[in-house]
Image (cartoon, rainbow, N blue to C red; front, side):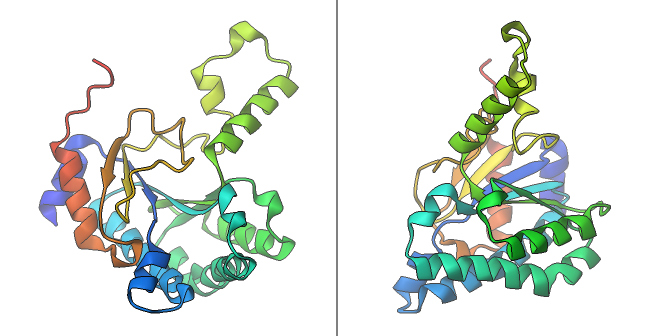
Length: 236
């Protein structure tokens, strides 16, 4: 583990973003209900959180539910929303004990009032924690986020000449959070899927063939080692 911590320190790796893809395909390959794949995905997230803490990763942002996911079957959407509620209710005390600070990014107004209260309780309870900063993207879409940011800027009556990258960054859901150093996508697909389009402008992208329920500390180590071998040029 010390070699991974050295890479994190040497590269100043702060923020990992993940597209947690492959829950359904993992379940289908095993002739299991989709729900089992999603539940296994929760276990993978817990393992990843602990690994980030062990490795000294300060920020972890995960794509839990996109603005497009509402187009899935109602039964699956309802299950996912309930899974979020149940997981946060059952796991919150443990995450709080492990010093995790929880945030949510996305348009939360479409979620049920009950779920919104559960999310707010998680934020309030963990707001003073100083461990891994976990951002969960719920009803999140990057185009929606940027559109919302532009609307805010227009509403404030800001002059054209005062609009710059910092203003836009500070109008996004991720205000105050450093941009991801690396974006990991599991499941082998090579798409961004409307995720953090502004924020990943110079992130290193790592595609992993394993489905999200298979993700663990060892695979995170592999991704960090790959990141450590990259040369980040920022256009230079």
